[in-house]
Amino acid sequence: MALGLLLVLFMVMSIISVMGLVLLFLVKGKKGQKVVFYCMAVWGMVIAWMTASSYPTNFIKEQMLSWGFGALAVVALLVQICGKSEKSFLTAKLLAAASVVLGMVALFVI
Image 1 (cartoon, one colour):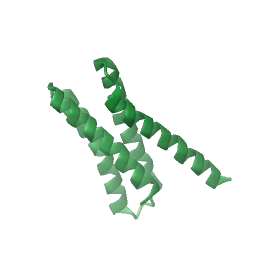
Image 2 (cartoon, one colour):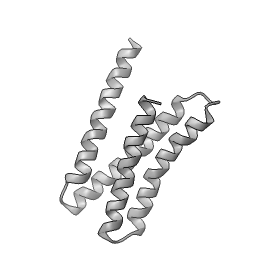
Image 3 (cartoon, helix red, strand yellow):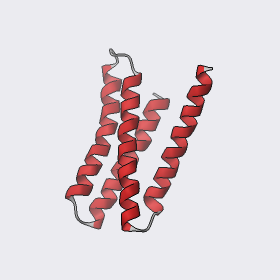
Image 4 (cartoon, one colour):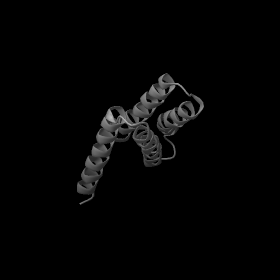
């Protein structure tokens, strides 16, 4: 029963992540890009929290690695807010995408 729920959770999280990443780079309007970007940055932080809290308390290295992936999303938000050029927004989107991808890998593989 529990493994079935974990499979459903994995599939839902994977679908949200893949669809969010696709939308992150394909949406054309500025407002839509920002909405998807903020959603993906928050999603990266949620994944980091889930990953870090899934480890036992004595797995410090794995927890720090997970929080590091979540920190990528925070850095992405800072780059997007502080930077005003299109290049800084692309950098922020890449950081948010890296946060989500690395967080998913850490959650379900490591």
